[in-house]
Length: 238
Image (cartoon, rainbow, N blue to C red):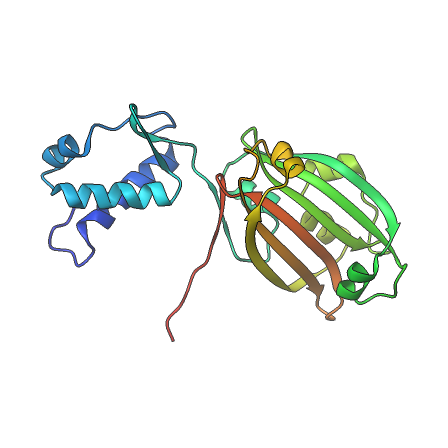
């Protein structure tokens, strides 16, 4: 660590450990010595070590267990707030995405869905419900509505590809989207499907994607297991 750098020592330590965890050099299950020993080994103050560890706990990379100590856990999936699909994001980070297609059917658009997509009530849309997993663990339950005239979707293709991949392959150009992010507790059924404890925290996202003509081409309402997933936002100063 660079003691002459303006970057705080705790943050330098935390980032070095974060890189090691995400690269696999510190795999899940790795246990750390106590903070006093780490501070002595690294010639750092105990408050510096404690703050670095707390940063990694808050990031979901470490967990503290009474009687066991501090341990590396499987990193959360961190998703940038960009116009990409979860499938694409998982692929790009080597997370081995897998998809179980729970619903793939054509329905008459309910009034709220029709309003979001800008089509008349009763217009035929494709309703999709999928359970997306990363490295063998369920991460998200995805509900999407797509105007039926845009493309045909088979459950086999949805299991092998992301929705945005299939839209692009059908000649649909994704141009922009609006989305809102929230949080709430899981219902019993949601917790069961995501293999989370009853009442556990969920992240929620609703997104409407548009093509280059400004027509809505997809409405998604998604839930994510907060213990294994987070959104990442980059901010630029004016």
